[in-house]
Image (cartoon, rainbow, N blue to C red; front, side, top):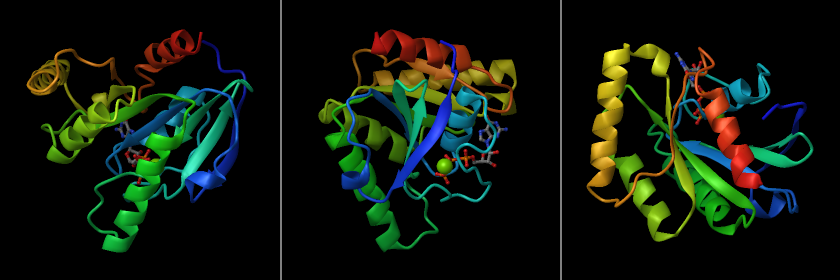
Length: 196
Ligand code: GTP
Ligand code: MG
């Protein structure tokens, strides 16, 4: 898949403000600071398309990016960021919940997981909820550049084992580094095959 054009279309505070469209969309979710916005920039090969910050809680709205005039990448606020107020957290969690349940053209939700960390309960719970709600999803490990090849492999195997405690099959899994542009083709090929 070649990305010829990637355009920021809009930021929506509420699900009702999202584009009314029949184009497929692929969204990125995960804990705050896991690298959702960075991954979108890496996939599109445009620095600064989605806003990135080393401080968690940067993305606060639903951001739609139109790709090749044919489908969308969607950047969502992170979950689980302790340092925003309880009200704000509830607001983010409502935005995320409304988004994943109501966007009929959402073909796949990519759940981003920081590959350096042990499985986090908040992610495991979120993934379980996706199963219950029958939301199509894949798992994207981020920040692979921060680990040695051996440790990377160990952590991914440990994560798979954890998932298999609850799941009969593993979802599609991608290993990425936005820093090193790793995993780009895998994700873009997956998207291409999914929309065909
Ligand atoms: P929120 O919008 O706050 O939910 O965060 P986010 O998930 O969009 O994360 P963002 O892309 O803003 O990245 C957070 C921090 O992680 C930034 O300092 C990035 O430079 C860094 N980062 C993201 N991806 C990678 C990666 O693959 N490797 C490394 N080394 N750093 C990364
Ligand atoms: Mg972000």
